[in-house]
Image (cartoon, rainbow, N blue to C red; front, side):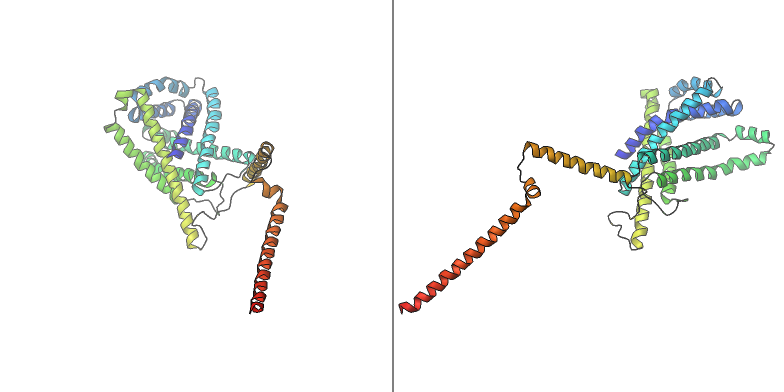
Length: 350
């Protein structure tokens, strides 16, 4: 729950720059019917599942971007902001994955951050493809089909075939998150990750159920207006992140079951090699230095303490142990001598 909440926080900062970049792309390459239809589809989705007031507020800036007004600068700012904020989300997701696999992050920052940036770019491209697949339907698909010379039958086939393609893209995106973000190395990339498939199915079911709940029972819009739409958005993001972490747990436990069946001692922790231990080793060395510095400061304040005596004066313990053994030996010899003397006196008395 806490991990999903932290990822929700990161998601909020990543959504709006990504939307800015998306609308700017529509403004530069999607002007006309395709761009207008895409913008209208997004506004209709916000109004249906979020808030009509929120859709009305977003309408003017979206139309300005899709019509090309300032799209170039908005695209540049949006892309830079989207990559930076989304990479923070991906990095946070990696920390959550490390907790699931019970490993420390050992990759240096100079290695980790570029890797997360590259993964973020790939994921943003995947999100863009998903949006294109969703909006290129109906009249837009027919318009594109006429533009490239395809018939009505080809457009119909596209409207049906796009859904498997969409599922494949989303599964690959989730599998990439599961594979590249944690500091564990696997033998091969899971093209069909069990956790990714379960996460996608669960996300689809929970999203449909949440949308049905908002449409039939929730009164966010009547009570809170625009804020109600934002509340619904935050709830859905939290649900989505919880589902993604649930899928990651399934992958981890599936790997544990495989290792146990192969005879590996994976009861407590998975037997997976780390991608790198350089950062964690350096962190441990720094911790040892801090402990030593703290011990020296404590010794200055209180030079003689019980804890420091064994480390600073081990010869005292050796001397004390030898003295104790010598005293015990002398005591036993004295007792034996006294016993012999008393034994010798008894016959003389008779």
